[in-house]
Length: 132
Ligand code: HEC
Image (cartoon, rainbow, N blue to C red; front, side):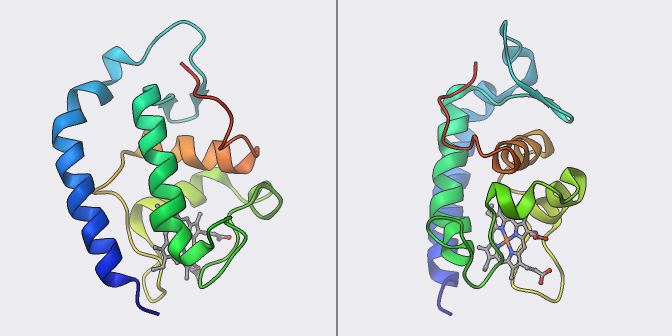
């Protein structure tokens, strides 16, 4: 499977935007009224939520399927994830799974962001409107 060049391009693009958007992701600015929280912290800012969704579709989707119903990697649908421990799913995203094709993503998202993705994937609300 020829996904590496794509990932590298996305990684470079992400590193660029990460530098620009870093202040937006600062936890102090995320505590609006009615923020949906995950075990690991408050929801990312709306602009960052859109970036994470795009990352999910483009980069994760390369292996887990455009509709996340599975491909080289297993499905990331609510049906597939709801009974799997959220913490271990978050850890898999951050650290990858050594010895498998699943790469680590900790340089591209925080633990809070990975936990937010897992929470939204598990309850099937990944495409729901941004929470504030
Ligand atoms: C290069 C291919 C590849 C990419 C890109 C990739 N994954 Fe994976 N992922 C895998 C494979 C393969 C596994 C299964 C590993 C195993 O055998 O345990 C996996 C496993 C997982 C699991 C655990 C699922 C389970 O049922 O145990 C999660 C969660 C996950 N990936 C999320 C993501 C997310 C989120 C992204 C994007 C940020 C991503 N993956 C990008 C290949 C990939």
